[in-house]
Length: 288
Ligand code: ZN
Image (cartoon, rainbow, N blue to C red):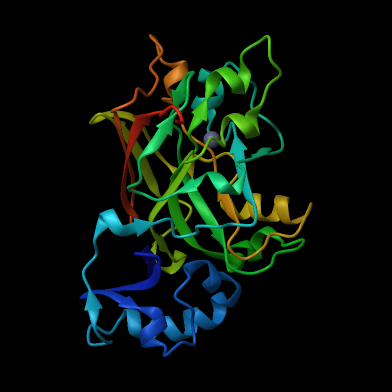
């Protein structure tokens, strides 16, 4: 099953286009995609047969420019640092023996084709596979963790490196990664049964068409089931929560010479089975 948030309405992706879920379900499911996650199991039961049926109803074409984030208002966003060996090495840091966790504040979520304002400083990319929670999760064992995941999408953990790590200020991981628009996700949410192996998904990103990062999630140090188990042992994970699973090597501040995103540049993000995001960076405008 694949879902999108097109023109602010939950859409089920079928072979012939997008089915408007509120209409096709006669209001059983809301048009607001955020409302589907607390009803995820019921939605899956309803959507499964329809997704496979090309005559399911009036299908709307996919219009990428109208796609919003598949999870516009998550209650919580967890992000994992240093979850690929080569990225830890390029950062000059030792591999952690437990996941290194920070947050991106939820109001920084944006859509897969939205412009992003580049604040002053050193704005950097971090392609990451993103897991979306589909059931409240407390103390979930690893071997049952996938049952708590609604599906996968792809995201960018956009980061402003000066605020994040540079002296003389204190390190500010969460705030430096939470400027408005710093968490583009999309273009769709894909359930894990669509994958032969959901622990092995290819992700990559390009700045101005030049490949900057490329990996497979089979290289993750802490897998999605391990992260769900670990995090849910600390606090409840709620339907619609996001887990940004970590970025591979190839970020701008570790390159020689360093490379940061400039206004006018386009960041393209691709994930196997999920599709492509294209986000253009724009200069901050002065309030008048
Ligand atoms: Zn990251």
